[in-house]
Amino acid sequence: MTIATRILTEFSRIDPAEWERLDHQDNPFVSHAFLGALESSGALDARLGWTPCHLALYEGDELVAFAPSYVKSNSHGEFVFDWAWADAYQRQGLSYYPKLLTAVPYSPVTGPRLLTRRGHPDPAGLRRRLVRLAVDACAQLQLSSWHCNFVATEDRAALEEADLLPRQDWQFHWVNDGYSGFDDFLGRLRARKRKNVLRERRQVEDAGIRFRWLRGRELGDPELEFVQRCYGETFRQYGNHAALNREFFARLAATLGDGLCVAIALRDQQPLAMSLYLQGGGRLYGRYWGCLEQIPGLHFETAYYQGIEFCVANGIGVFESGAQGEHKISRGFRPAATHSFHYLREAAFREPIARYLRQEKAWMLEYREQLGQHDPFRHDPFRHDPFRSESA
Image 1 (cartoon, rainbow, N blue to C red):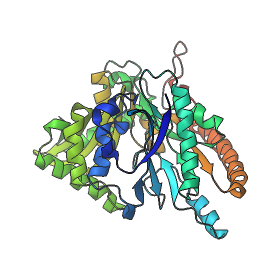
Image 2: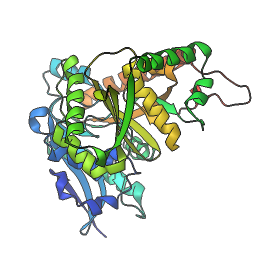
Image 3: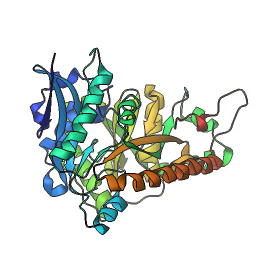
Image 4: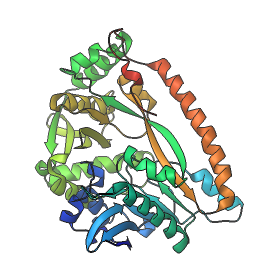
């Protein structure tokens, strides 16, 4: 059957049942609920630098492939930093913006970017068609470039075959090695690291703070107001714009259900801090944290240790706690590679940026070796080395 290409400017045109026939690998960030809530809540619009420009393939009336994509007029909310590229364009009298981005807005989370219909006989061919559609869209819409960020392993082949420029970075993930409890996890850490974790947890306990976990559908108006307030406070502390609003959190809580949960820190039954988590595909994702009062150890407890305990209790294999953060290593998190791919329509810039990315990759590998010097784990000679279990 002939495949038709379409560019969609509204995610709401995709029916939820139709979306569920795509292989999104139970990743909550490419769920219909999450992508739909971003647009319907007003978190994305041209004034913030986001114009929906989704790439879709159809066989007849059936959606068979989709790439969540946006025309960007800046680089905010992407977590793959290309400001220097924009400066280079400007110095040559060229405009780097607008550009095309395939990613999940405001979410530094690896996942499917070239989604294909489950059971389709040629998923690899569909991914290649999406790549061609993205490149063609850059010419058609006069966009400087296309960027595909936080790419899942199964999408990389189509991007590599199209000769896009690869880029690598590191995050820090916690991996569940079948721990029987938090104490079992602590027992695998070196003594100094273990004592530090215990000290931080004791600070929070001694401050009289206890935690309550709520699933998405258990969040009422007071809890949603508190989540929004804490989220906004974090951004205000750093002088940044809080893009997500209360309507976004309310829609997400109503539609994701058990896929969303919030750890709320309470003192004398009064909420002080929260961390919002998403889960799916055997992973827990810590995304938004905030507090109304600064208490020693509270950030680590709310955003890290509560998440680790949740993973152990629920048999979740991996905990991703967001971008960057070398301080996570001493608390039991391990390096994990992230990947992005880049197409530049202006031929004169391809080789200089490709050369820069090759050098950057060498720096990244050197950086990874340096991280190994801070391995927090005790090593049993009869066990594998958990700190080196990531793939590059």
